[in-house]
Image 1 (cartoon, one colour):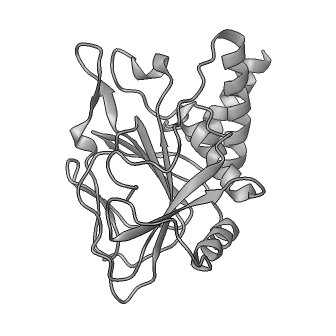
Image 2: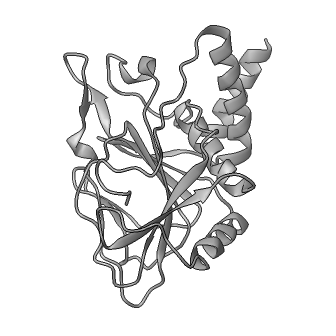
Length: 248
């Protein structure tokens, strides 16, 4: 689903660490952003932690899909030769800014200053990807096209979870956990694969998001860090609660 294990079109996503009041103010701003750009967050798996949320409406999806379908040249092929990749400039693109706001809100990080967002296309008949674990702490993908149920699904073998792409949907998960010795280690349960594409369907377009978590989140003793607003209450209710508490 991504550019391949160990590969990233981003230079490096290492969010700046903030403490005290500055960090609280950043989280408050992200809570405001969450109200505007995120729908309810649903947990799909606890081992590994996988969540989904709707981040783009049909108009947003249509704009980005047209941008990709009309693109004449792509930057090249990632390690998985079944797909092609490119980098979409964020400047002047309100939809991509919305995606970065949503991802920031989900994980309590600030990636809103990124200059580009990678996109990947799987053509009809593509063989899919190999099974791999991404090397960043957190992965997110945003689907920009609906495909047939038997085409281009995202499959996690460990929880035996298969997800059919739904346009506008963000799927996000953890790739690393804190080990018993405090070192950050790969979570093999996060292995995933993009299944083969049907020859009869359309292309599979996605935005690719990857980031490392701030140190205070990465080294949590339980290793169970989850998205900031991923609770049963849903993102809107939790964000409202944080705003109310901040005003008291």
